[in-house]
Image (cartoon, rainbow, N blue to C red; front, side):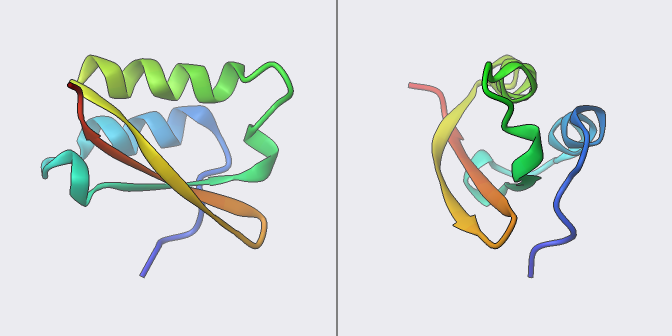
Length: 74
């Protein structure tokens, strides 16, 4: 079960950085309001994922939020 979606960048980044398992086991629920037209918020989160050696592996759109998935960077 997915926890409540993250509503701010700092909390999402903290969860990403604190995760100790493999990239494929991590799911990051983000509210749709963080998907601003320029993409700044998601770019900040992506920078932290890339720093871990992870890259995006798609997402699932749910009611009011997306669950982002990651995999090891090729």
